[in-house]
Amino acid sequence: MKNYAIIADSGCDISVEDEKKYGIDIMPFDITLGNEEFRERVDISGEEFIKKLCETEELAKTAQITEFRFREKFDEYVEKGVKDVIVVLINGAGSGTYMNAVNTVNNMKEEGKTGQTEFHIFDSHTYSLGYGYPIVEAAKKLEAGQEMSMVLAYLEDWFDCLECYLLLFNLRHARKSGRIKAAAAVMGELMNIKPVIQMIDDETKTVVKPRGEKKAIEAMFDYAMSRAIPKTPLIVVRSAVPELEDQLIDLIKAKTGSAPNMVGITGSVVAANAGTRYVGLFIKGEKRR
Image (cartoon, rainbow, N blue to C red; front, side, top):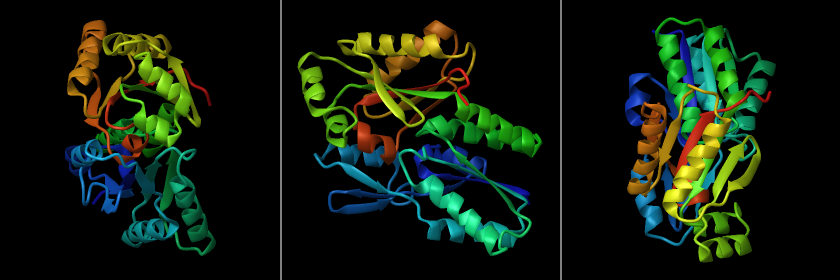
């Protein structure tokens, strides 16, 4: 039996294959879309959710994971006597999930209910595979016998450097969710502007405003690579525009000589704000904390 565990929320968008292979314990978000309610990864997959979103004008809503659910989960590992539990969660600036986990552990400590278990809780400061990728890498490192302290340092360094870039091909969801002001979104659509959105910690801003889809892909890649530490991982998140996503992947291969380190499809969290026509690129930039 492993003397450690890794817990994540379903916003990490880790593949089912990696989830099972590395024994990652993923807690699902609850999603509401119109009159339907789902538990992500349990009732609906990322692909199925994207398909539903394509067929409706409704905006999806996600509910944070509560302290009650964290308490149930954390108690399980304490009862099993697991020594170290790594908990990696969605950006605390956009969800109360991280603070709910922190509060749960603090309450358990006050009650003397953590036993011999130590909880290592990370605010990923990001979304989707931006924290899904390092979770899988952490699991690989632990399976290979790397010391817990080194794996924790790896995760901390990753989240201190991570940058996210979203290229939006359709601005409807971003306008409705408030990510882009309505007037700017309408003007962008009229002028065929495909904005590149930079998301770092709790700051979201448009960094490039190219016109046309092909130029936009090249512009996002060039901007991101101008900030990326050379020879560090590149992660691509897909939505529902495979031909454009493939263009980005092909561009990465052509410019760097290798494929992205991870490619996966988004789930509900990013799609609820960005819609179904976008591509995401995660890089490791300069350390900021």
